[in-house]
Image 1 (cartoon, one colour):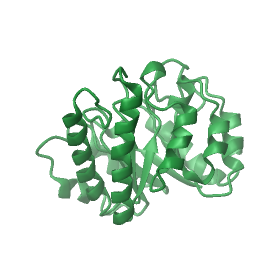
Image 2 (cartoon, helix red, strand yellow):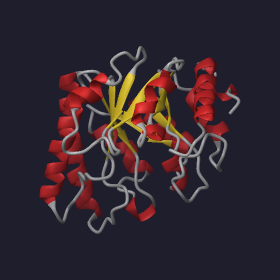
Image 3 (cartoon, rainbow, N blue to C red):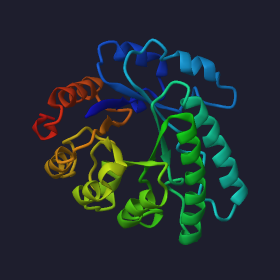
Image 4 (cartoon, rainbow, N blue to C red):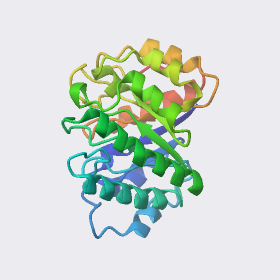
Length: 265
């Protein structure tokens, strides 16, 4: 198992991240949303920001302003694909993985089947590009209830249909949608390469620290421990989370190694 910290807490204060990471021995996942990301962003500077970091690096592709599943405005979906392609190619020059959302998570799904087909069309192309560039493309489960583009069965099936991608299971999102998380982990098997770890109240995507909500962690740790392949465990805590708690949880996961169920979080 490898452990990462997603830099969501630094989205609005990215210049503070290097100091936080000085004594962190795991990987990091860079967010590409926030005030320092805009039309005039210096991509070379953003890459250089973490050039001295010794650990592994992943990149979370943009979340809020793109949508691969826009049926009403297909030109918007096509533009989103081109934007994701640009970010993915940039990430491939220094990162080992990139995280992609299936669609804009808070949009109503008036044409669900058509939206699924459109999303799959572009995800397959991005997966092929990632494979060519030598970077792992992790596709994440997003959307809640009637805004969930792929339910748990369809999410598992997505990776049967598209061989060039790997799954990232967001535990918090799955909790809100009442998924059987342990079963999804087992069903995905080796197609599961990463988990976003955070907690919530079962209704809102709060990105709380592990143990601060209603998620049934013991079942998850057991399912993770039963996997025979390596997984990326990525702590994705909210901006308001205590940085001390975030780093402590990260270190406990690092120390736990394969026996994840013994972490004291």
